[in-house]
Length: 261
Image (cartoon, rainbow, N blue to C red; front, side, top):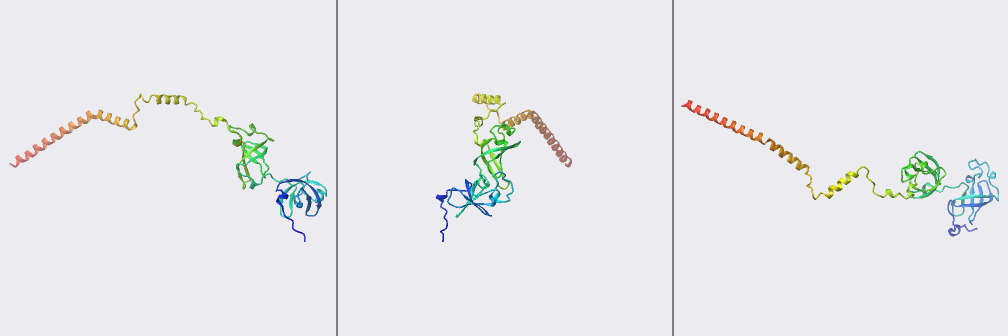
């Protein structure tokens, strides 16, 4: 009985997405056995076979594409215990699970829109650099910064696997202008600033402005002083009226007493 084939990690040293130039050893109904630089058998399933001249064409027969001793370009799909699965379809550089914020990836500008630039980074979908993420300065349209075909490094800002969206940034990898770190200039307020400085320099020689409470109290006192003659006149009239009333009351009482007598 043959001993089972062991997967020697030191010996294989291969991983998914590794690229090989392999030679077709045998063709069957299920696929082809490919010789690559690895001791484990490498199998190319028929579902992973494509026509290099027309990758989108529907494959009718394996023999239409592959023949024994042909040299083909293949990529590793999976490394199993006893064999390696291959594919003729170039794998994505980044699966959704492999993308994460703050990653720096290399890409190529595919197309421009008024709101930003779409960049091919090797994922299932191209990523979008919003116009606000193209530069630290104001950008009116994306073609002011990039053009179709440009290759550039970008930073991943956000990955939404449900919506299949990748948000990228170019300005995150660019050094910000010095003006952004300096204190902004306040245009149109220079005169006010100078007046404030003059006031601060002369505060020791000037009398502080009164508070709102002091102003209100002064106004009340002024009104009281203005009404003082009127109040004194009313008090005198009141006293005079009271005195006259007392005299009338006394005369009335005296008359009543005289009538009784």
